[in-house]
Each structure stands twice: as structure tokens, then as C-alpha cells.
Image 1 (cartoon, rainbow, N blue to C red):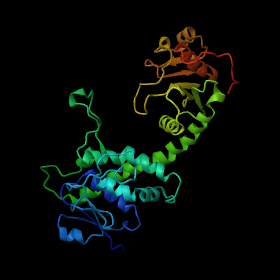
Image 2 (cartoon, helix red, strand yellow):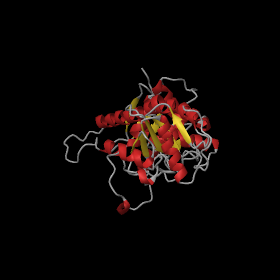
Image 3 (cartoon, one colour):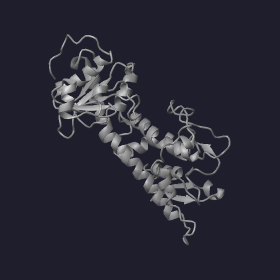
Image 4 (cartoon, rainbow, N blue to C red):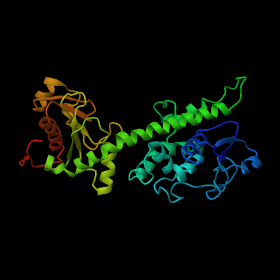
Length: 346
């Protein structure tokens, strides 16, 4: 039986310390550790590790509070992830020093696995940083409230807050509910991590190969062909472009098999991975919102069967016609001049 203890504050709980406790519980030395919820400094001093309370950040002493006036640490200031400058909460502090080991433990892979650094970075960007920002009162963007078009669905922080006893609940004991918060944050983190490890990462090699072979698919090099439909390719493409120092106008379209068996899709490349319908170059304006025989007629492409109203994606029954949709769109926009050299069909 472990004699280790994890100290955190009692009373109202938040996502950051619940998630910090989850991460620690992933590690063998804290797997069976007792969690002590208190603000009694004497009790906290007896704990093996303390998170989100105590007024001290000292990694050597295993003290990880972020509320003291002197604290302004970020992933960048700690020389861990140089691109992230959001002030850390207890979630980010524990993730900074124990996150890689926790990821390895959750996935049952070696701590030195080649993809641990990539997963560590990805999970901070898409999970942990938001916990840090919310807990420190940092807005996600600088837009005014009245500029927002709609409210987002309930966040993880909102779900954790909803576990607190209602103001008029006769049972105000927060300890059992805190353990539910640990479970909730842990399940959310694990679900996202499993997605990145089991689905997102395997797609990277396919996208890398498509970028490498793009001039074989068409001489312009502006179209990539992905043999598997439905794989997550956009963020991979942008990271690969950054790594290879490719400009944003070098790759304009991606073609892939339709996952429902309806031939092939031709997709624009978005300006950014999260920019919705904003793209580098859209499909031909005259085709947008047109379908089936009418589309085939006005485009001159026999098996073209749809183009989305926004122009961000279209479809054709054959690979050659899907490629033709991309080529005609680029030719119309002046992105390619000569199409005299034709490569063999893929």
C-alpha cells in the first residue's frame, strides 16, 4: 500500500486541480496515493506532493501552486514548449513535469516512444492550455462579448463546475464530487489522447507520402492525393508545410476517396486548421451549389456530381474527373498556365 499523499485544497473545486490529481494518479508512485483536501498548512506540509494550494511553486520540493503574486510561469518560461505563453495553472504545472510519463502510462507505451513529444505538444495545445487559461481568467480571444455570434456548448470547465453541490443542496460535502471531477477530466483527456494516438498519428505518414509524391500526381505539385478517405489530414499538412518551409500557395487541393463509396472528393486547403470555410483557393465559382447533370454540363467534367455552396469541397465519380475539377479551378484562377504535360492516371 502506497504511503504517498497528494495535497490539494478543500471546498470549491476546479478543473485544474482535479486534472492535476488525475495525471498524478496515472504514475506508479501516486497510483494508490491518498488525496488530502485541506487548507491547513500543517497537514499540507506532511503531503508528498501538493497542487493548487500552499502559495509555493518548487519542483524540487514537489509544491505546485500558481496563486502567489510572484508566479508567472508558462510552458515557454520553463523552457518546455517555447510556443506557449499562457500562464500555467496547477494543471499545466503538473503536466509540464509529469505529462510525458502520464501519457506513456495511459497508452501503455515506453516513455521514450518516438511519438511521446508530439503527443505531449498536441495534448497541451488542444486540452491542457485551455484549462490553464480558464483557471487564470485569460480569455480565449480578444473579441468583445457582443461580437460573438453564438454561445459555445458547455465546456469541460462548465461540466466540472456543475458537479459542485447546488446552493440549496442539504449535502454540501464536496469530497465525493471532487473524485467525480477527477474521473471526468481524466476520461476527457484519455479520449482525446486515444484519438491522437490511434487515429491522428497514423494519418501523418500517409499525408507525408502524399506531399512527397505530389508532383507525380500532377506536374504542378499543387494537388495531393490521399488514398484513404476520412483521415484527418489538414493539421498534418500544415505542420509538414511548416517543417519543409513550403509556402501556402504550393498545395491548393487534396483529393481522397469518398468514405461512403461515392467516388472521390476534391477538397480545398483551409487557411488554418480551424478556419471553417476560409480556404486558399476554392472550386470554380460557377459550379458552387450545382449538382449532378447540370454540374457535369457547365463544368465539362462528365462525372462531377456536386460542389458545396461555399466552394470548399466537391465530388466526382472518377479520380481523373476529381483531378480535373481541381485543375480547372486552378486554371480559372490563374494558378497554373500550361497543362500540356499530362501524367499517367493514378
